[in-house]
Length: 111
Image 1 (cartoon, one colour):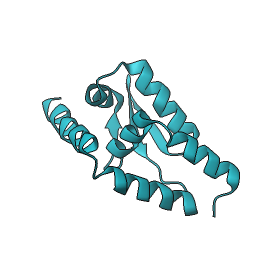
Image 2 (cartoon, one colour):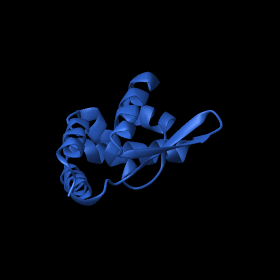
Image 3 (cartoon, one colour):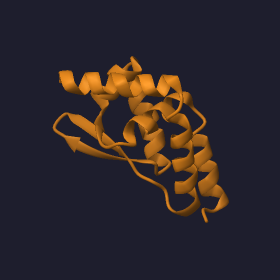
Image 4 (cartoon, one colour):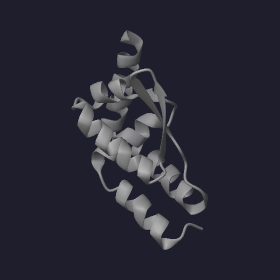
């Protein structure tokens, strides 16, 4: 089981709507920041700030490709992974999350 400090970090990371949206968009694979920016319709510094927060919490991993950075979901160990999986499953039923995924498919197809 995760220790209390790890759980507090996990719950803090999950306590923001934009971070929840980002995590759900990353659950099916790697996504470029530029695509996340278009889906969430916000500026790159804001997206990067949220992704950095998630990275510090151990929930995402990054890969550089030239000037672009691609992010992917990184499941935490033990209890934290179960909490994240349940959270993402629950989010998947939200209309706004479904809209985000439709928009991501459109953005990726047009790139």
